Image (cartoon, one colour):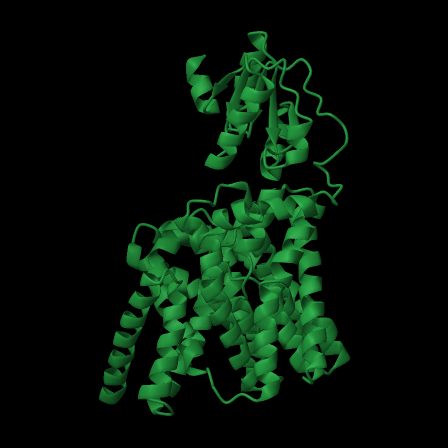
Length: 508
């Protein structure tokens, strides 16, 4: 025991040093965790009993990682995604899977191996991207919301894939029929548990912080225990437990209590991945790693950009989302780990996945950091490609803006009463918006709107502001605000430009 504690102490000191270096190089800290595990395993304690014990603890890390993802998954967010994000993500996933499967097959991998390798290509990193958006304060921007929306849909697809893989392990036809029925039963148990019992338990436990901590962990391990009884993996049970807690009124309290523990075991999961990296690769595997790595930064952004443009999103929004999602995901590693555990693929496929995830996270971090500079460099080339699109927002019709004296670029949530007040003063107001969630609110409140974006040159070319008396810039992005001001001066020199909708409200 003493030897393990000493070895673990050395490992943790390695983690501290490498994590500091990772942050100094502006890299996600999970890169530091994985590299720490690799360094410790390769140079310090390879093959020792300490490594085996850490790997056992890393399995618990997978459980907590899925639990955390579930905790941050809220069904209320799904209704604001809209069909465009579902359709785009589905098309992207099918293309990614097909391209990767064909390439792996051509390189000589078996059908099963090719399927698992193709799964790596399907997903982007929720942990990396969500953290970058939060750090850059872009979660409320349009491209931030679309990015998070796509990640949510991808998470749903990942859980469905884990379910399908459980289904494929059944050899009995009757067993295959019962797998989806057992899945529905698991969801029904979660629904009944939340509706009739969980909120009452959490209400009682909320008064005692330690009890809330214990009860929340108990919910996690309750579903971790139930899932295998119904033919599902413990990881699916952990995710459902997280979703169950996320859809209670005590979600934030639970998350604040559990997050330090979850972070610790997530750390061990990524350290465990570092232990599993091997350098003993043949030409076939090296060729696949190089191909997948290169195509990650070509195929993924191109497909995401084109599918979002096809659904009508503007040039800049589509580009920013494409840049944000150009990497492989930890979810792919989790699915492959399940395949290795079930004997469907070998450990070399897991090593390929880990190396690809680490390399793409490293490069993608810099792309995300400098996304605005990249856009400015690529904009003139994207506009040439853009001319081939006939999207929802690039219509030949001139936007109908006749009779509106106040034009809002972007919707600031002022509500129906404010717009009714403007009409009472004899001023008709129009909102120009391209955020589907805001359009949903505008429809609900019966406020006049026009679908459009200042990032779309086609829209600006047809924009008629000659009757506008006041133009309000309510967009969050500073560059878009500058474009609005410039456009107003060019198209309606007499119009008064006001910074935000909030400032207009305070002046009335």
